[in-house]
Image (cartoon, rainbow, N blue to C red; front, side, top):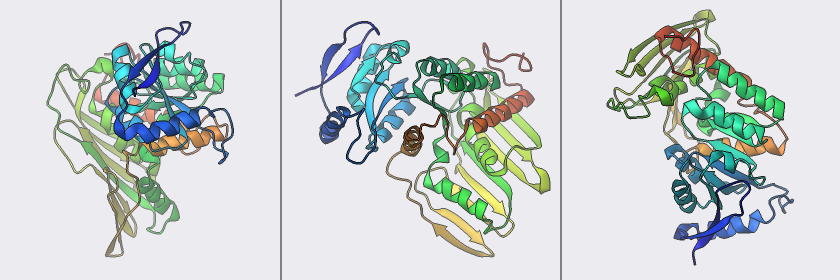
Length: 378
């Protein structure tokens, strides 16, 4: 028999039931979802609340995130929304969501939704985050959090005003491999961290119609993938005293390639690269007084550790998914504790990050129309 889910066309209309086929490998999982969803607002035998997740924007990253949500017992795949109802219905069918909406505004009216994952392009993050927070829906918003500091400040203010959880979706912060690196840095077992090298590149030929190069959608390597190396430096070395930045701009004036050098007190430094011009190993290296660490951006790759001339590898279990289930699990843990922001990735960190990105863009002349004001005026 086909599975049925609800499709809403208005917050005030009665839902219609659409019958859709259920993928074979989802049968057992769907039975589990239907069983637990009846007890969403009650205490289960394990005293763990199940949370109704909603997906705002049904693109590629939302597909990966939804697949990872299926790994979490506490996550109920409840609703998804796209600007096109047919797309939302197909998405719901593919991943097992109970409801599909053809409007973001209509979806956030649903009182059963606990958490919204925002997966739209960067330029819409502020608008969609505010839409959710005003309805007091907890928000996990994809990086880049927004386009500039002004927008992030508005998002943080809305979170505080509505006393509603908000976090930037930086999945790398929560994977065991990166957590282990932070643990080693803190332990000082290799001495002080002195230098960070981090890059993220892949080859994507210029296409004026591609999101990667479209400034109207927040295109450019810095906000799309360069944010990862910048995040790595900020998380491990902190806010730099001096920023050196050079960018190669595409015909659309988005950055196709970016090189960064951060300078810190005590002769510490970070050297970062991002771009769409070529492929790379896409790893991060951390150089200490007594040794070094190298990690891959790929999941479940061993940590390479060198100390006093000897080398070893350390294998962490990053799970079977894409890595998004760790951040999703953390959000639910925060809500269990009635927190409105994460202690591991606080809003102050996201504010520091966007301020750093703004300074880089100012130095390289990257402007996003309809978002940037002075000092980004072209």
